[in-house]
Length: 516
Image 1 (cartoon, helix red, strand yellow):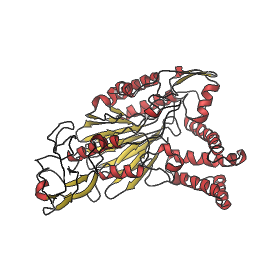
Image 2: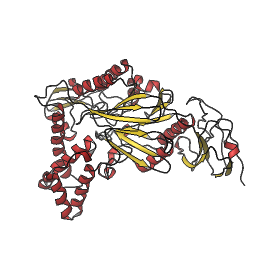
Image 3: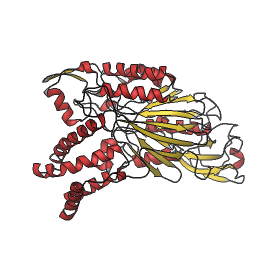
Image 4: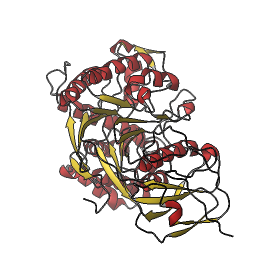
């Protein structure tokens, strides 16, 4: 038997134990909670009074009610003009209303993966530190000078909001976090509101060390609670909602705009002396995030997402080749985010300057990845949001630093440092499992791999020619015909292929398709 379930005025119905949200209400304001059980029929008259400002309504369902484990999935979207609508509803469902967001005029800045390394931690350069660099090629010695310049340039640009997408420190050293808060305080003193999210290097990291010749010594790192406390002035103290299961939070730096900082890191897995690099959202975290997205749409807020790990693949096969750099179940998660109207997520982690998009029914979502400050070309982004929903994004590489580079210009130094490091890393990777190539084969392939990564890190790969030597390597691999050679050719081709959209400078419309 079908029953008609009435919806109180200006209320979303949710499962028992969850938070009900009202149009225009504050995020944390509790309203009446109504239990829903049994199959039913939802009619237009039952929902039309729920949100008088709504442009559409969305029915969401869950396979079962499980408290924080409940994950909601959109079932049907109903235009606000459809006065004759009737919808059969499942056992567990809720209704949300979508209200047109109003865009504030803003200037924002984004930078990522600063990996700040306090000079005092390098007591004496030597085997210990060089061994670390051999497997994790970053301009750590120059990180302070790079950050000095980046902070000065961003401050000069006078953004109202600055977003930092994780890996603030080399390996979560307390002294490095303390220095980072001083850097971010400079931006705050210049009038910017600053929001951070941690990366996989930042918390409970067993690689937090000082280096003295052949010796390395553990130094204090930070816990998740300490991280939130240290960065209270840079997001956590301004949060209007915090996820109890992670370091995710929501902030509203200006009326109408929500910053959704999503923590996909798993610090509890930093075991056996090594940090866990990958990222994923379990059901509890994902449920918290979707609840925030539902609340934002019901209140007419625009949401700008940020996280550390990649939400989408930035080249074909990235998740298979480098699984730790794209979140687990990224296809399903990005589809869910898009269905809730999340359009832009700012990421880092892979140290590349790259923008990709995925389209679903409904929704399109962009993963705008910003490269690392300590990896060529050491970029940051400036973004201008207009009231018509246009978001103009420009990229700015650091071109000079106050550091003795022996007369070599910083872009040349950075490019050479990256290329040389990638030669070594590619050789090591290709001679290790699962490839296990002979050293001669690895050394033959390494220059092409290094060139491909340097191109990908800069973004807009199609704007630069591929060297004749690398073109020859790719052709040779394709002609061999064996699975390993074909896979290597495909990897190189994927790295040189720039997936849509433009990576460095682009303008996107945040309004739904057809509304401009």
